[in-house]
Amino acid sequence: MAQYIKKEMADLHGTGSTSAYYRLKTWRKLEFDEFVKRCHSLHRVYDKSVIEGVVMAVSEHLAYELGNGYCVKIDGLGTFNAKLGVRKDKEMDNFEEGTSKRNAQSIEVTGVSFRADKELIRGTDRNCNLERGGVERLRKSKFSEEERIERARQYLRENGYMRVSNYVSLTGLSYTTASLELRRIASNPSTGIISRGRKSAKLYLLAPES
Image (cartoon, rainbow, N blue to C red):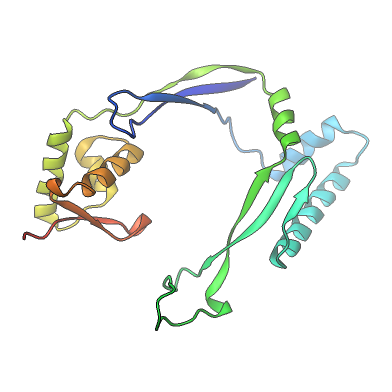
């Protein structure tokens, strides 16, 4: 029996109220060997070693075809595409004149995108007998937004820069809520806080005095 969790969603638009969304509770991760055993228990006509061999062969050949530039569709499962990105030890480039050109050695496969086949979605739904699994509420801060901003400014005066994780510790907000709030704060010049950098390297600083 599967369980669903009702989870509170952050107020992204400042409406004063939060929304809810639902997620499936994950019991644990099935490792490959256990998955094969469970598959064999339902399909006894196929030997366990045959199931294991076919899955491994499909996985290996899927990597081969994706690596050669093909988009692969497996009926009943979904569609796979390789994703490219710049190697972690290389800087991102742009289209401005004078920028050095990338060579193939500086680009690598950074992931594989997957779009589920409709039959897989329908089959999962048919096998999903849900029951209530509980509620997850957002972590609330004991400080008002004005107090949180002032605590952030004080932290910046003492430390020079701030990350989202520091703001989480200062305010008691969840990481996601803290990240969204900081982004909104940094976009408002009246707060005196600005941001620099991108993604995991993003820092928050006090705006230079004019």
